[in-house]
Image 1 (cartoon, rainbow, N blue to C red):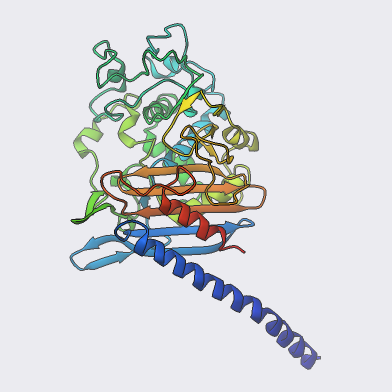
Image 2 (image 1 turned 180 degrees about the horizontal axis):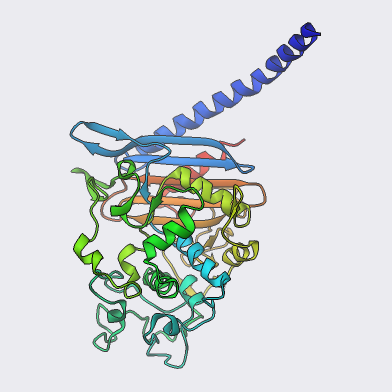
Length: 427
């Protein structure tokens, strides 16, 4: 009997060996392709790429190349737990926190944001048109980033809409004179998510960074946070670099972490100015953490027995509330369809006339968000139907916004190369 079991086991090993060997060869080839992107992706090498490819809800491939930061003692390598300031992927995670309050009946997606903020917000071109929470989430609010969208802790976000802000001024935070009524025109707005953070504070009574930690990140077992000075593991932080002929220049998240002065934050009035925690782009999170988030989204609002949102709320986030029809929006990114804090890569043409296709031959249904700030480009994209996901952070882009454009889309060339390489990693 034992001999039969032994022969069966040996047969299994012999049958499985070619598949394992083929997978190892495939991963070696993928590693080589990713190494080449780090080395040659731009005019100079990138600082780092961290990436995960999921298939059928599992990690099929991962890559970590380059350095998280440079020190006098040498380079610190990137790894699964390296925390990146992940840029606009933060918007999706902020939306999850907001949707918890929507489910509790404390916020209405179609409620006037003035009622939640405690001051009146109207585009003066359309004084009779309320701006709703939904419009903030899908960038149809007609709010403009203008000359900036964050204020120090001792200021109130209401100042951005004061009577001293006049049309034509660099600090005027509405689109003006174009005839775009709120709700009808897509224009990407980081400021809108600063207001979302402020609304979360006013409704919950909790400081935005701590609310997100307690109600989203910790329940999902995701390391990181929106306040760099309160990270549990600051030693995991990646410094973001821009690159030029003079070399890499650190932009944010050097060690020790630097944030708003502690004395200012200690006097901060909750609900007065959620922009200080950068709800639009300030989340520090690892690629491993984003892979967990992908599973949470794919599983309809639950992860490992913890349910934060109903399947209906996830579906609301994913469902397009704006779709480009050729004349209803302007955007420099590959966005032609947007839900609540989420992009849908439909393959349709964006306002620049280029397909929203991450790789050639794409006919998929990826949803998620991109990020672009401080020399980093990031991606969080998943498909529920087949359990696929593409999650990555690429650091060390040029410092003058001169990244090489993509060959076939409004993604950069490096992003197209990462997508294409990861697409083949699960085959």
